[in-house]
Length: 204
Length: 213
Length: 139
Figure (spheres, rainbow over the protein chains, first blue to last red):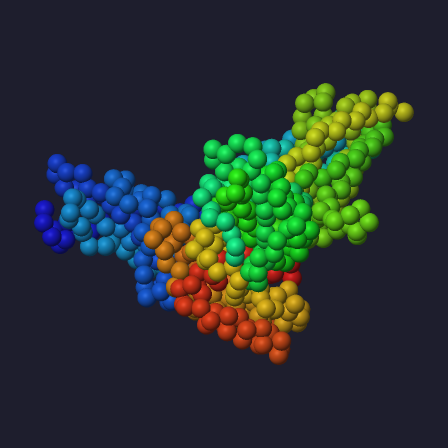
C-alpha cells in the first residue's frame, strides 16, 4: 500500500463508559495478509478553545493491534472531549476517524453498588465492592416496619467491613445504597434492598 | 568566592525527610570517599532565593542536618544544598528538589487510648503535633494544619476474628453493645483527602471488656 | 475537582519544577504571599488565577514528554470546568473584587511578565501546589 488515502479510516468509532471507566472502540480495518495497527489521540475543550485545536496522543494506544483503547486516565475532567483513531500499516496511514459529537464523562452510566449486609450481634455492618477512586456511597437503612424513619450514612472509603450502626437485637433491619460521583455530581440508582436480623438477646 | 578548586565527588541523594513537619536534610557521602569528609549546609526560601548558611551544620561529619526551625513556615517552600570537603578539596553544591512542608511531610499515626465497660469500649484519638522548637512553644495539632483530617479506626474482635472499620471526623468513638469478657484490639489511621496524606495504622491496642454485671 | 488537579500535579511536580532553575523568583508567593489576601477577596482572586492559568500558562507548557503533556491537559481541562463553576459565582455577584485582590493580581502578572514566556509558564505550572494549598487552607 502506498500513500495515505489507500488505507481506509476506522469506522464505528464509539465510547463505552461505565462507572467512570471510558473505552474507545472501533471496527477493525481489514487488509488481507497484513496486521493493521492503530493510534489514538484525544482533544479536550481546553485544547479546542485555547491550544489551537491540538490533539494529544495516548501512548498506551500507539500502534496497537487492539480495536479498543482505555482512555479513562485522559478523560479526567468534566468537559467535552473528542477522540480520534487512525489505521497504520507500515508507512501508510489512514485518515483519522473521529468520534461523532463530544463525550463528557458526566455521560457515564452508573450502576448500583454491590453490597453485602451483615448483622453481628447488635451491630449492622456493610461490605461494599470498590468502584474506584471517584466513588462514594450513600447508604440508607431502617428498621423493618419503620420505613418512615430511614437513616443515612455516606461512606467515602471502601474498606472490608464498614460499621453502619448499633441496632436492637432481634429486630430486622433493611439496607440499600447508591453510588455517587462528586466530580460529575451524579448518583446511580439504588441497589436492591437487603434485610438482616440482628442476632442476640432482645433486651436493649 | 575564595572557594577551593572543587574536584571532590558530590554528595548524593540530597533530600528532605519530614515527619510531622520535622524537616531533616539527609544525604549520602560522595562515592569512594572514606572517613574524614566534612560538610556544610545552606538553605533558601523559594521565591527569595538568597542562600542562608546553617552554622550548626558547618564542618560536620554526619550526613544529616535538622532544618526544621528554618523551614517551619509551611506557607513557604524551600531548597537546601550540601557541599563536601576532604583534604583541601571540595565538591560542588548539591541541591534538593523544591520542598513543600505541607505536602511533602509524612504524618505519624494518631495516639490511641481505649477504656472499657462490660459492654462497650471508648476510643480517644489524638492527632500528632506539628514539630516545635521547644517544649515551651505553643503546640499546634496537625488537625489545625489539615482541616480535612479524618480518622479511620479498625476494631478487631479477638474471639470472632471479625474486624470492623469506622471513619470519623471527631476524635472520640464509643462502640456499644459488645461482648463481655472479650478482647478487642483497636488501631487507627489519619486520612487527609487533600493534599492526599495518609498515616500508617497505629500499633494495635487491645483491651478486654469487663465481666457481665 | 481540586482533588483530581492535585493528583495530576503530584504526578508531574518533580518533572515540572526541575525545569525551573530560578529559585529567587516566584510568580504567586513573593513578594506578597497569597495567604495575606483578605477572605472577602478570595473568590475573586481565585477566579482571576484560574483565568490566568487557562489563558496564559498551560498553552506554553508543552514538553517533549507525552506523559507530562497528558497530565497538563488533564489539569488544564479540570481548570476549565472549575473556572466555569467559579464563573457562576462571579455572575451572581458573589465574588467581589476588592482593591487588594486587584493589586495582588497585578503583582502576579508583573512577576509573570518579568520572565520570558516559556520560563514564566513553566514556573507558574510548578507553583500549582502553592495555589492549591492556599485554596484548601482558605476553604
